[in-house]
Every structure is written in C-alpha cells, then in structure tokens.
Image 1 (tube, rainbow over the protein chains, first blue to last red):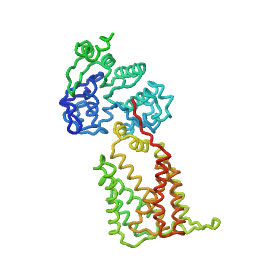
Image 2 (tube, chains in turn yellow, orange; image 1 turned 90 degrees about the horizontal axis):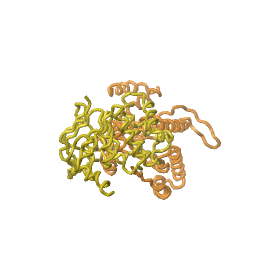
Image 3 (cartoon, rainbow over the protein chains, first blue to last red; image 1 turned 90 degrees about the vertical axis):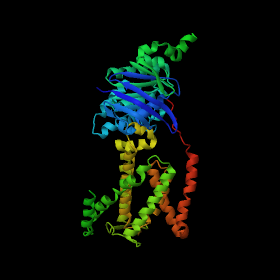
Image 4 (tube, rainbow over the protein chains, first blue to last red; image 1 turned 45 degrees about the horizontal axis):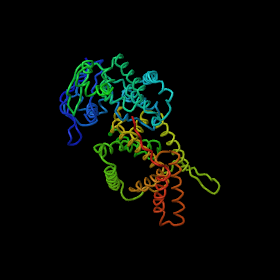
Length: 241
Length: 247
C-alpha cells in the first residue's frame, strides 16, 4: 500500500526553527490538503519533504525511508510544483516538459512522447505554445507548464505549493479540475493552499498548519464545517456580506 | 579500467608512427581526468560561492602545472605534422595541419550545437545553468552536471592540444596562456553563441599576430587589455534580463 508517512518532521533555516515535530499521512489515491495562514511554514513543509532543505524526522514513502536522499533522489516518487514554479525560462515549453521526464529517460524509458501527448491533451494552451520560450508565458500558462512538467515524471505523490496563487478565478477552477482528475487517475496529491475554500472542496483529508504546528486535522468536509476553520479561513468573506 | 588505458599507453609508446593510435590513447588518458578532477576538487564544493570555486580552480591549475613540470620536464615539445601537405593561397602558404585545425573547430562547433540543442543530456546541462532548483526538482543532480561539463571540457582540451602540438611548441605551462586567450574569444562571443565565440577567437588571433609584428613586447598585454572594452560594451549593450518568476 503506497503512502507517505511523516513522523516528527522538524525543519528550519539556520537557527530559526519553522516546523516543530509534524506528523502527517497521505494515503494512496487521496488528495490531502494543508491549509494555513501566511508564514505558517507550508512552503517549508514541502521543501523539507522534497529534500531541498535539511530536516529532522522520518519521511517514509511506501515503507522506504527517504530522509537520507537529496532532492534529486526523491524524484520521481515525489514531485514538487513549487510556489515559484522554477521553470527553465530560456528553454521551450516542449523542452521543459521533456526535462520533466528526465529521471525516467535516464533509466531507459522511451515513452516520454506519450506522456507529453497526454499533458498536451490536458492543457491545449501548452500545445499551441510548444515552441515558445517558457519565460514568455502568462502566469496561468506557467502554472500549467509547471504542473505538466511534474506529471511527466509519473510521480507517485504530487506535491503542489499554492497552485492558485496569483491566478485568475477561471484558471484556478481549471487547475483544480485537473487536480481532481489526477486523483481519479490513481495518483496521490499533497496540496498546500492559502485558498482554503477551494482546497477543502476537492480534498479528502485536511490539516491546518499554524506557526509550524498542525493544530487541526480531519476529513475535509468536517474541517470545512468546523467553527474554528470557518472563522479563521472561510468565515471572513461570509461575515462580510 | 585505468589499467587498460595505462597498458594501452605503454604499448602505443613503442609505436610512435601510428598516428591514429597515438591520438586515441591520448584522448583516453586525458578525457577521464576531467571528471576525476571534478570529483576530487569541485564536487565537495557544490554549494560554494563563485569566488571560492574560482580560487580552487586556480589552485588546481597550479597543481596540474607543477605535476606537468615533474612529469614532462622543462623542455618544450613539438610533435610531427599529421601530413606534410602545404599549398599556396595567394601570398599565404597554408599547411595541412592548419586546415585540420579549422575543420576540427567547425566540426566541434556543430557537434556541441547538436548536443546542447537536441539531446536530453545537453538540455539537462543547460537547464542546470538556467535554474538550479528547477533542475534538482526534475532529478538533475549537481554531480551529473559537473561530471558531464568536465568530461566535455577535458575532451575538447585534449583534442585542441593534439591539433596544435605540431604547430607550436608546447611547454608544461603553455595551457594557461592558450586557454586565457580562448577565454577572451569566448567573452567576445558573449559566452552564449558558438559563431560569435569562434569569430572572437579568430579576432584574438589576428590581434596577437599583428601585435607581435608591430609591438612584440606587448602582444599578450594588448590581447588581455581587449577584455576591458569588450566587457564594457557587453554590459552596456545587453541589459540583464532577470528571471521574473511570478506565479
């Protein structure tokens, strides 16, 4: 049974500890979301899980300990779409996607083209712009490219850092649509979002991260109805009306 | 594997007349030194600042020059020409060796263009230069990029050395001056374009030849002083485009 099991994860930058002993689980075929305010440590959490920053604690995927592997070793089991997208601006859309499949190509896979066709099917705008340089794309298209690139590696667990940030509502809807589709295709997804409403709508399970600690967790529907979450993350808009 | 190469080197030393063999063995000896140097000196420093890397590079260069002196002595070497062909082109007399140099340069440029433009490994190397974090996120490690870059550099260096050793006398420390002038050519090319770098290098060659006729004591200074106006021009003419990563 494939699952992400995190126990006692602590991480920080230099002397500043941002995460304090977190326990987290992502089951197979589930969308798990971590919501919380700015500066709660959400991006730090994903960076630590991906191996980009040093961390203490245990990170298991499918029973295998990942905590000694650097980021390049955790791909393609774990794939991160970071908040800043980190695309290769001077390379074409097509090259960005191709490089997403690098770990598989390096191990001898020859079907990257098929995965690319699937990505183009999901994101027709990318196919139109396949030879354009990534730096010339709009915000929404970059997000799609970043997501497409992560999908090219056929990750077991896809981690998304604020996919809706800075995007128009229609594009946010499209992106979340794709995320829900990914779950039905069998992948697991860890979604970190500030937009708690949208996140809890598509997620199965949720965690609330505040000040580096997981203060609340539960099935997404329960969280969406819990008074604390409603007040802090969902209620303000409702109360304003 | 190193034993194989060492054995081949010893065997081919007794056959100095077989050019192809000598060339291949030389390439086989020098090229692996690239990734070995990377592993030894640079891999532990993968996250160091550019200044530290530069200092280490200079230190490694001194070490290599010293070892060169120990192994090869202070005398120079000029090896045999590949062919004794010469022909006249107007007032110039051109040797077969010079033609070989030009042809090899063109072929190398084409090969590199294909490597970086069309193969996944070349694109991976470019990607690492463009965005290090993005490259790590798609599984391209610093070790992979470093090994590949150093292997390429060692191969090209070995090929260059083989080609020019019949033309100019090679001493244990000749490499420094040659690569510095190549560096000037690369700066003129903006470090991004093959034809521009090739033209830049030819310009440097012209400049040095004319300087060595008109003011031979200053020929090297003139070539290196050229770096200053070129850098000034480049920094004024091409404003840096910051990668604006807005989500």
